[in-house]
Image (cartoon, rainbow, N blue to C red; front, top):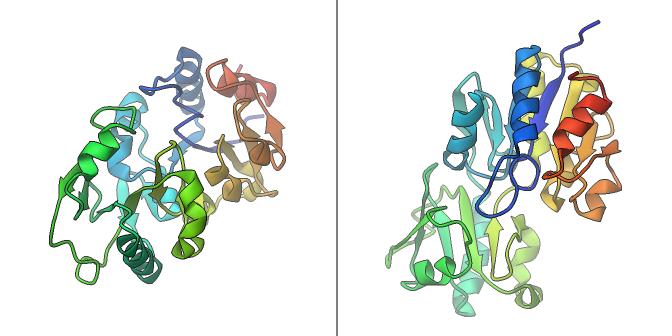
Length: 261
């Protein structure tokens, strides 16, 4: 007997692999099969909505959790909350004192602003995907005026993190060696908003992920699938550990649970 499931897929390292990001053919097959069977399919990502266009276009997905849980798209309608202002303000003040470059996104667009004129050059040497986001110099950038911050980038090495006291009070993720991304890390908040609006039973929610920023959405009341390439911390709290993302991992899990044939 068919029972509709509500799938929430992380993007980087789960749906898409390698640099530049590529969607394995088995993942395309599986997501299309889930949609065709009548299941609900959503992205659940730390990315801003503007950063998801290629995946939305690929599958025609109209539902998403974005901005690490701060945003949702339901039936194409988007709403998002900015990052908490005061922790970001304190962090940027400390970064300025220690001459550590940073940039912030002021809206849901692929543009980030920095008062450090060389920030674009610094990030071009670190971000592997060309055109991922544009960094624009804004010498008069004032956090007290631009209070709505949706994402931030800090050019900082891992060994420097311990010296920045304010980092203890913001959520951030490190994907690369030379920088961190300031973003919320509780995708479960967005999933719960969708759950409540659609009156979804917890037992019908399925989440897929691979990194530490997915841990908070691996709730015991939901079915949680960790990719084979996932970090060990995520695997420890997963319902099921599948194969690697580039080794038919999503398809393998969906067949294992009988969600597709």
